[in-house]
Amino acid sequence: MRSQREEIVLRGYDAFNDGDFETALAGFHPGVVWEVLPWIPDVETYHGHAGVLRFWTSWKETIGDFRVDVEEIVEVEASLIARVKISGRGRESSAEIAAPSFWQAWSFEGDAIAHVGMYAELEQALAALGLDQT
Image 1 (tube, helix red, strand yellow):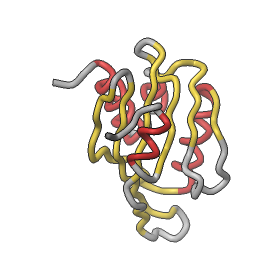
Image 2 (image 1 turned 90 degrees about the vertical axis):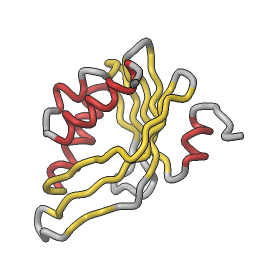
Image 3 (image 1 turned 180 degrees about the vertical axis):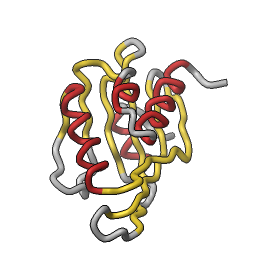
Image 4 (image 1 turned 135 degrees about the vertical axis):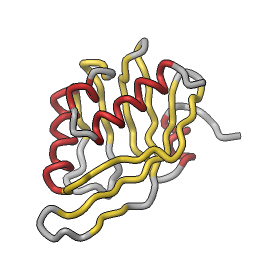
């Protein structure tokens, strides 16, 4: 059985994939901080609903049929980690886009998502949450 936090995050992924950003943002704290992988173009840290929306919109505008698929999601203490894979097609080239799986670490304030970090390795995601894999 999934926890309430897992349901919030999974509902957000589903809404994002459907292009329903308003529903996807519903589970986020107004002061959310989203940190992206260093290999992402124009890397920056996004703040608040407006920042996250700007990040999501930039991906959806660049990549047609852009989606994030959850391969694994685990609740770890008061946080979640998810292994995800992104896919889509270049809007101009129609070339298929698929990146290696990566990890997202989700922290909460109450039941609202307060921080999302993106990491290449599980160990990095756990460390960002102040957790040790051992």
